[in-house]
Image 1 (spheres, rainbow, N blue to C red):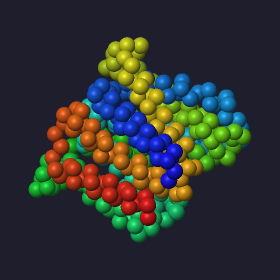
Image 2: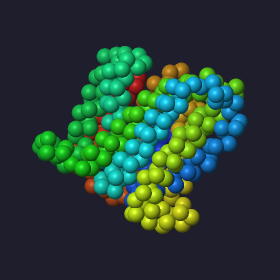
Image 3: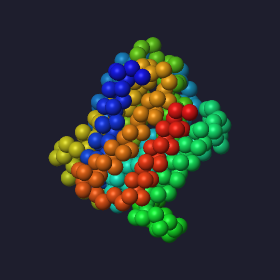
Amino acid sequence: MTLSAFWLIALSIFLHVGWNLISKKSKPTAAFYLLTSVTSFLLYVPCVFFAGIDWGALGGRFWCFLLLSIASEILYFIGLFKTYRSADISLAYPMVRALPVLLVAAVTSFFGIGKALNLWAVVGIFIVFAGCLMMPLQKFSDFSWRNYMTPVLGYMILAACGTTGYTVFDGMLIPQILAHTSRSQLAATGAFISLLELGITTGLSIYVFSMKSERESFRQLFLRSWTPHVCGIFSSSAYILVVLAMPLVSNVSYVQAFRQMSLPLGVAAGIFILKEKCPPVRLAGVGAIVAGLVIAALK
């Protein structure tokens, strides 16, 4: 990994943790993430006109997968705002980041998408699963199925399912975008982000303006709060930085492994900035998740 790649990924990590921390402190609503998506769209929409993409050549399958990715993103944001209104970030952030690893592996294996998992990847995924089981507990002796049958865990799973969906679909969409651009990878990626954010904005608008509480939240935030706009800049920029780092490493798995440092940083932010209580079993769970993700990414 080059020094440039290191700093790009490190900045991406801090931006990702930062926008999640701001979200948690803001007690987000769907209206909050609607404004976040609007900001991301406006930030990257110029790329649509400068990416040199032949949109007509992409075909119906591309647009179908794009709609499915957008739907997955909307589910993710709905699950995320409900999660952050109910759970500490030291619990929610690692779980929402780690659960999709299990779900993506299950989906891709079942449908035969991509390469088959090797032994070390399977070992890493099982370690991640063990870490996820520890996260909701207050102490090791609390292990019981009843501790997992809670609404907040359902919200986390909803967010994780959304992440799984857009991860799988984006993995098939981005190569098509890059294959139909006559210009830079960065411009093409920005154009793709703008399309996603336009769809997310449309879907969340329907959700927000159909609910009285969300309409009120929108009125309170629109042109009155800077936080959703900062989240929009941070979240989309974090994604772009990862894309920029990938050509600078000898193996993209190093990027995926290094990105897992966001998990302990997210937990640390909850403990030291938001003053959340974090029992030893949760710290052990985070350690297991990070170790499992690194093993799965590097092997």
